[in-house]
Amino acid sequence: MYGLAAIAVAYALTVLAFVVAGRREDARAIAGFVPDCVVLFTRLLRDDRVARRHKLLVGALIPYLALPFDLIPDFIPVAGQLDDAVLVAFVLRRVARANAAVVREHWPGPERSLGLILGGAGR
Image (spheres, rainbow, N blue to C red):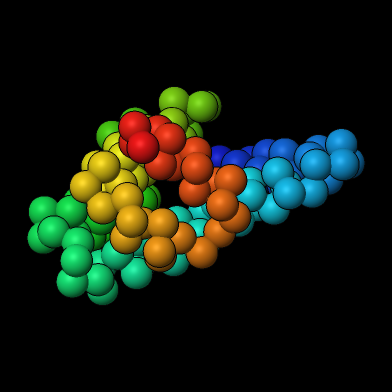
């Protein structure tokens, strides 16, 4: 519970730091990245153009992120949250490599955030 609160505070402070620095677009991208990923994953699961194996990856990732236990427990600072981020990046990379146009179509967030995702996928 305390770990989740610490993550939320760190997340909020990061967004606030960008706002104070006058980088509102970056603040919006950071603040909305997790919700944008949730929307993207939901849309990808519903799209018939996405291969079954990619839907299985996305479908397996969602409950893994929601479950209270992980490969590396969240109470371990940094590494506990890093395993979740690595898995999200891996799944986004796999899906985007095969379906960059579909990911682009379904991405609800700023274009700049999408560029980071697709850039990480070699597009």
